[in-house]
Image 1 (cartoon, rainbow, N blue to C red):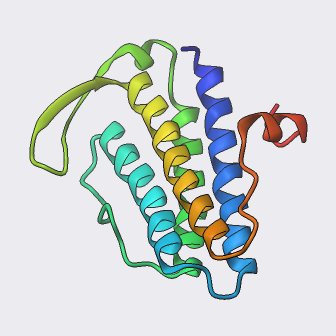
Image 2: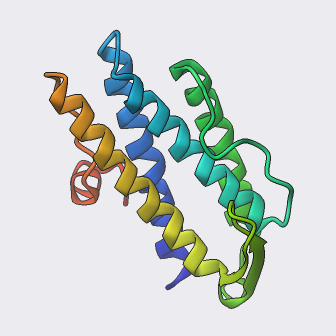
Length: 155
């Protein structure tokens, strides 16, 4: 996958996470499970970035965060991803990244596979949040990729 395509997917991911934050904030009292899953999305993205940068894990995979704390973590993460992508080369996408997963198992994956996983993992969990929001009688964030493109949020 080309580097610019991955950058584009991460722009989409940032937009989609912000859309979810906006909807949850507008609910007043969002479903607690939705807050937990959103915090997990941000924490998991942070974890994978830590792994890509070969740094120690900086936050738990399932942190207990308020919506404000999650939004702050999302803001910081956007900046860290921008820095990472700023130094990323097409050749580096094919290089293996070694890491130990949360079960203590050692793995190695190409950087491009990790990056694609991050976006897909977040989309999966945003779907869970959408179900929770809808079940509570509210309208979930419309985070379809094609919507982001049509509206000009992702070029």
